[in-house]
Length: 437
Image (cartoon, rainbow, N blue to C red; front, side):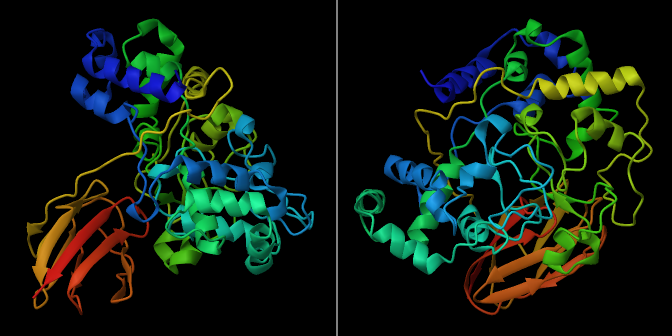
């Protein structure tokens, strides 16, 4: 039985078990058992976009391409060169090194659990995994391989031609679009394995020590780590300035938005003990250094988010407890890929007839609305955070700028159809708008 199937069994035990009474007492703010389960339970399936549905042939092709050094200009570097499974799908370096042998500006990010992400790269400049794939391949300081000669080389390889035909039976060509879809499909299957923390949540009280459980209390309470490192993967996939002394503008340069200056994506904390050093610039060597940064090392700037706990002080025992807890999010054996993939099948959310939408706790309410083309849509920020309303569509390119708490954004839609509205700072915030006459 694969670990992914085993994880499903753990989820079932988690939902049905009666041994969780002691865990509920550890929840902060009076969380009841049901809320705790919803917050930390592992998903039973992997989401795939309708534009790139899962198939085993596509995944297998993507895995082959991911490990093929021919994707680099000089044949020295594959995707797997910098994204090493045993190093948490990072590379153990402070910053990555490209084909020319020059260090890059940023640390190699982990690939774990990106099936649930929105924009990718540290600064979110790629809006999907498919869009991300070509970035490192063509970048002159990374793999330095132009796409056209790469596609010609792969198409001339009979084994690859057959593999592409199996993976894309309705479009059996070796082309850029199919290459991106194959690698993105493989990357979506990189789901971090269950750990002692998951066993603890599922009711095995002895899976964590008293110190590790105390670290969990701090993580979800006093330290405020769970404000951003939330959910089963311990990330909200949003972008924050966490006060590192760096001149890298991060998300601010992508959005051209002052409120997002120095902001970088919240990484998953799963398998974190394998992938030192840490942060977007690799500047913190150990998990102990990371904890010390948040407890007294934050550089004060106007762009620090409200989610970041200010003036945090932790004594040596509290710091040790936090580090001990973080290590429970890393598997103890070799992290092997799942043998069987369960693709998520989600039902569409029904649209609500409304001309006003509220934002609260990094969520739109409602999440899907229908309006008439003559209507205006009002989006009110009832949150404590700055948001940035965006639409990237052939029918509409919209950017609200910084939407501060209490401010309302007014939107009109030029044509009928469906639109995806999202927050540029917290991209998992999505609002679907159906416009009719």
